[in-house]
Image (cartoon, rainbow, N blue to C red; front, side, top):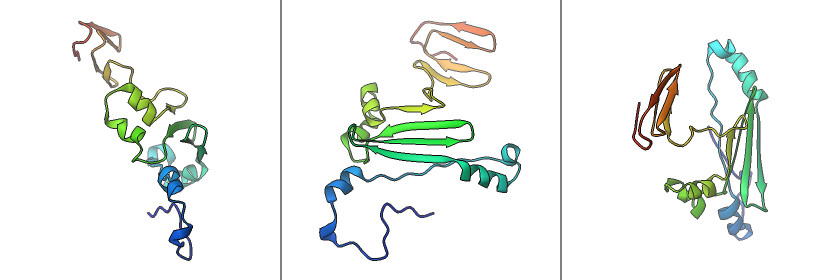
Length: 152
């Protein structure tokens, strides 16, 4: 696989490059979607499914962010982000503050909803939950504990 942000037949003269734009508005990415024979029937059917997917990336100058939308089958994924990983907002993603997280990725949605577990719920499988909410519910069972204490 090869990814190019700018590829031309002839090299670009260095004097003609807008380095400010390159360092503040350059972006790239990829989508990785997987499937199996049970979902798609064959590799050819999966390839048709992938060709039908839609990917849109639009630079929002007013917000200085990249708005990305991906639609595949009946699912949609949307997110926004600053253009470069070296920006203070993006490097802040490793910080624990939710405010820093929102500056790094102002929004992210899977089928219109927040794609992560709610605060206090750390794991939610088909048969169990783990969290610190003080109340875990799964398959009709309820576990009430002290809020803030980890329970499973």
